[in-house]
Length: 277
Image (cartoon, rainbow, N blue to C red; front, side, top):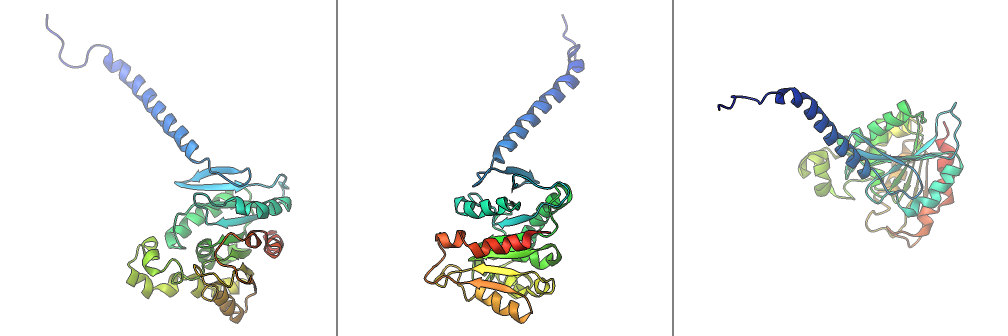
């Protein structure tokens, strides 16, 4: 008996049915895995989700007027483990005042154009699709200052204010040109030659012209992110540009987890005053 050459009878009829089903199961499995990976640990109950490949979060106040834009604090850097439990007290104050908290993980972007594009994706998601206010107030902790101030320099009209906890404002100070250059897709020499184009401390004019108020709390013994080269230098330049900046300098405090940095009444009051649309 001779076997037929080619597909067995009926097999070709089954293939179109089974392959889409198999493909659907594979996509469903990957989808479930992706959902599991977006379960970000937050200091308070909130929603974590993906925008493209970047994990974002929103912690919403218990009640909000649907007729009004939602005021919000934009926290940076949103990295694994951040925001953490140290921010819990502050976040509770914001929520009680009807102010949401949100952020997006742009990686170790140091305020690069690539990182700014990720920030813009969060801004559009929240303001265009979720009814959030057009002018959030940034809360930049440490290197989150680079990210927040860099985006603010390019989008000054979309920023209600900036508050920093020992914020990095000078790329050369931290993390240093040789470490930061990769995030900018440049060599160290190329970034050095274009530093004024990217360095937040050099890019304050647009923020000042837009009347964006600044606030920082920064210890005088900070060796990792020195006060004079960062918040101190920003205050000097910003005042010369006609801007307003409040700077609190706790004595004998460095780049640490001192409670006063994270339970600062002046910082909370500043954000409450400037987050309202």
